[in-house]
Length: 158
Image (cartoon, rainbow, N blue to C red; front, side, top):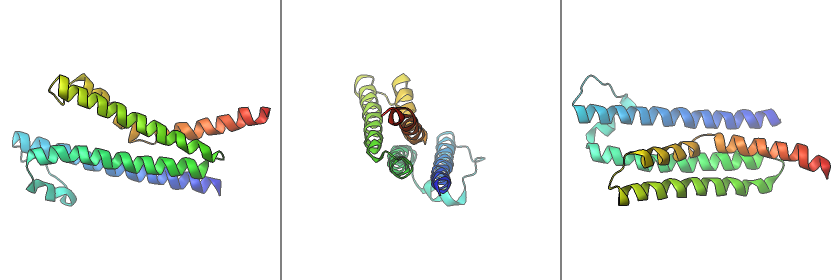
């Protein structure tokens, strides 16, 4: 029964990851197509409706989608840890980690925009890297592994 829990959450993370990759890769292709007037790039029919919007709208839509995937990864991570781990109180660490990742990424982007008057550069790269961690199963996997290690080492001693 425990292996079904792992398979279920691995499936959810894989589904989320593939959908995120599909959407962002094709949005980036569409942005390239619009910016460089390159008609050789083909956008899948499922996302062709985005061709009706201008470059700026699609560009800023990526920020909204980033936040949406952040929320979805948070929810799946939270419930994966809650359901898989024997130590249910560890779920608060998922909340802390996701809050820290969002706050750091937001602070760095705000700094970059206010001080550097830009949404590109090293600060943008760091912010994007932090959100990349949040939009992956790494937080859940690390927390689950830590919980198992804690249970095997600490609880055996007490």
